[in-house]
Structures are given as structure tokens and as C-alpha cells.
Length: 185
Image (cartoon, rainbow, N blue to C red; front, side, top):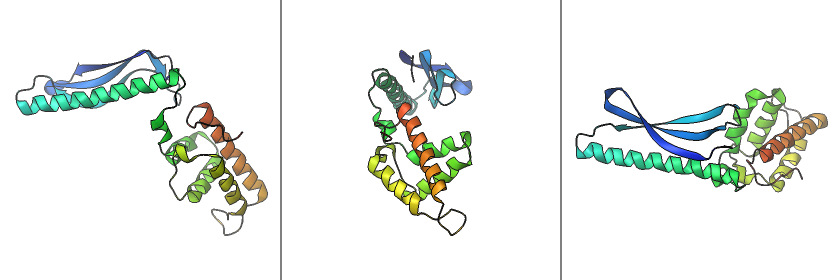
């Protein structure tokens, strides 16, 4: 989220007497994955336009607080990026989920590396856990693991290629500020 200076919480009217919350980014920011400039983000939080009783007013108050909390988090992420603070929520995010979402953009080897890393960490890994020690253990794992489809060891060339692909992914993560340190160094 770069370029953006303000995040404003706004509502727009819907049918049936409801209002929908959305965030208005000024002057907008570029999504690093799609490279599109985003000016608005719908929150899918709805409130009554004209509450008729106390229950509806309480509901509106609770939903308004939640929408404001989301606005504050988005603005905090923008400030963190602008002044090079590391976003702690990104750090706690699921590394494997992020990796899996990147697979369609790359060749088949990325899928093999993902599957080996998934097996290595037993299906659980956050960005916080990515460090030099884990990477070195993964390298050793690649040198001794068996093929995914056949019951024989992978070749040294394949292990080297998988390791190189994994290191390339880590470099992309560091460049995009998804991990704190460049573990390749």
C-alpha cells in the first residue's frame, strides 16, 4: 500500500433501507499482486439507514465500531509501509497459504518445491518462522528426501534446482517486505 495518504470510512445507501460501509483511499494505492490502483474497498458491513428501535441502534453502533477498527488497521499498514516499520500482522500470516496463491503464476517446479516444503514443515509455517536455520534444515531435507511420485531419492540436480527456486521466492518475499531479513545473505 504505497502512495496513499488518507483512509476515510464512508457509507453508501443500499436498497431496503440499509447502508454499506466502504473505505475511500486518497489518492489511492497500487495492489502489488494485481498492479491495479485501488481507490475504494467494500467492507461488506451493513447498518440500518434509519434504525427503528434500540436493538437496531445498538447493532449500528457495534458494526460502526468494527468498520472503524478496520479503517484504523488499513491506515496503520499504510503508515508502517511509508516509514519502513514492519507490519506485525503480515509476520504472523500463513506462509504456506501465501506460497500456494503464488503457484499459478509460476512453472511446475514451484509446485514441487511447495509440496516438499509443505511436507517438511508438516503443513504449518508462518512468515515469522522463516529464518536461516529453517532454510538450512530444508536444504538438508531436499538432499535426502524421496520423490513425490516415486519411491526413490530425488537427484542432486533436482534438489539444487528446488533449493534455487526456494531461495528465489525468499528473495521476492524480502523485496516485498513479507519477511524481515534477507535469509539468502
